[in-house]
Length: 87
Length: 167
Image (cartoon, rainbow over all chains, first blue to last red; front, top):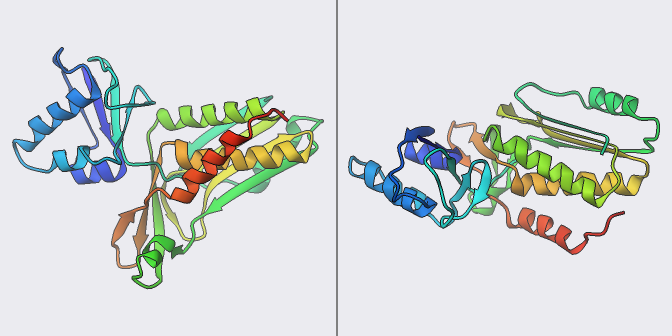
């Protein structure tokens, strides 16, 4: 099972802070995961495509900043969030 | 670096207590530089949007448990590679914070002032652009908006790439 986290404005827009999902073997990159999430969630309602395909959205895999082309495994912790604004 | 303290917490902190603890750590401390970030009332973003000056009533700070701590460790280690540091303390608050409350504290001790000043500024610049924290500002009329990342903060971080010799 992979754990997917959503933070800040991404969390609010999606109305979800985290979920656990079984990743099929073909879902082996962040991009493939994004497509899977959009397909699963947008068939009900919502605008996951609009939120997750925004150019400013960042991704982390196992607490390290990653790219949308980065590989992922079924045991990873993956997070989507906007640019950071601490301090 | 002799010691590193990183704390992400809801409760307030005491600048005096942190400084006293750092002074007690080491007899060779010749310089102790600190930075404290506060919740400012004026919201420059709303001001820039020519909607007139807007004041905020509070900020909400969110973080990514695990990743944020890792980010701060990496930032402190990078500062330690660049300067000879003794102790580093980074405290960042989360949750709902009202105007004038303390948000963040960075304390750096070293033998001489140059390293302490520079490392303190370096850690803050990187914290603002690399550590997993997000701010939402709330107005008096209870509308809120997520603060946008600033170009000036990204530029401040990039400037450090030009100066990478160990002092």
